[in-house]
Length: 247
Image 1 (cartoon, rainbow, N blue to C red):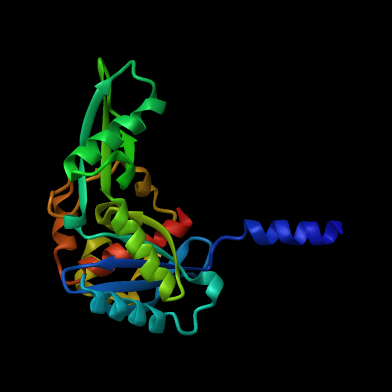
Image 2 (tube, rainbow, N blue to C red):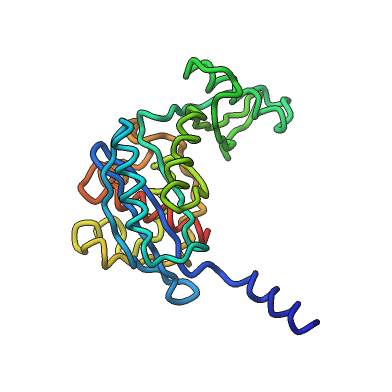
């Protein structure tokens, strides 16, 4: 009995071997699969392009395309990290009294998101993080939010294709994560095909602060913003989403 207990504990502690990210541009979705080769090295093992759209027919095409892309992938490994398009999200910075308890920040952010989207507070999804340099009488909180209905619709489409929606985050975050770990840096976008990208998990740059800006609202790194607008931008975002499995 103790042998089996130790075995399952070891299995549970093993890192993910494969991970998937799904990102969207104006015309299509890009699905990127990454594989962990060694304890700190990750490379691309799959790259698929799926038609995108907003009509009922397009949603059906999307689910069908995603289902086909999952052929050969074990059902236990069909977990997707997804980034929404910039026009589906709102983002900003909220300044709160420094003496306001952090456990009350969520309600303040939720109210801000609901007002900007014109929705009831319980109809929005949101996330936030404190600014590490906040000081004095105010605390700065970076936030991002979207219509909860969009998340539900995406979750339903992904489930219909036989996948599981694991997480949703701003494309900027995912691109920043990928750029930090991409071997050769952003120059690799120009010098290497996406299928040859490799990522080094030992790069400590992933700990650096990142703005919750969304594409179209240029963040602090102009080079990364330009990379996101390039032909390889969506693939960079999708790879960053998949890398979330190891960070």
